Amino acid sequence: MPVIPFADRFEAIADRRSPLTVGIDPAPETLAAWDLPCNAEGVRVFGLEMVEALGDLVGVFKPQIAFFERFGWQGLKAAAEVIGHARSTDALVIADIKRMDIGHTFEAYAGAWIGDDAGTPADAITLGAYMGSGSLRPVVKRAVEHGAGLFVVVRSSNPDGIMLQTARQEDGRQVAEALADDLTAFNLGNLGKSGNGPCGAVVGATLDDAETVLDRLPTSLILAPGIGAQGATMADLRSRFGKAAARRTLPNVSRQVAEAGPSRKALREIVERLADEAFALRG
Image (cartoon, rainbow, N blue to C red; front, side, top):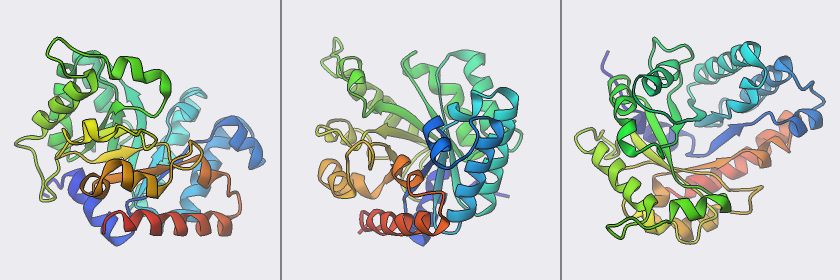
């Protein structure tokens, strides 16, 4: 069967459902609010319940793997079960792993999550690139081969990242701008029918200067954290990102959704509203 790139699969499901990306973040305080134990079984039940409640509404789920991994192999087994169940609903899954390394080690990280032969196959993963953008090459190669997506942290929503990400290089570009240029170069020759390539970017929805890097990412999907609990709204996303970039954006909401649970009815109500708002970004 032909390999269908992640960006094309995202376009199809965003049109059919919405581009809304729901985080599965079983933080200790969330588990407590849901009356679940803070252990591997608790994160497993939380994740499966989120998928059961929302699987027919959500186009993309993004489990934060750290909250599973903290419980060792049992937590990772729970993550694999949650990811498998989410994909069975025809939703796409971004494994939020934010790995960063070089050479064979980075290849091994990619092999753990990308491809049918991966330990825990996901549709896309998040990455860091501050070991140098060249370190991404083996991961990009694997992503292209398997039709997976990559979301590289370019401009994050946390204030502590500003100094590093906006530092100036000798050529005058900010570090984040140079990284954005490199991602665009990686995408050339690997564009799908949607016009987007495998290398997406993480750009915070709370950033007032987001267009600085977005203008350099014309062929990238944009994963945008910061909506809801961190203060940004869908309307902010359109005004800060601009119409063209907003249409390529996966608005990510985590805590705001989880706080509506464990009631399935309440979860569905908030996701239906957010999905409608996210869908409007594509207009």
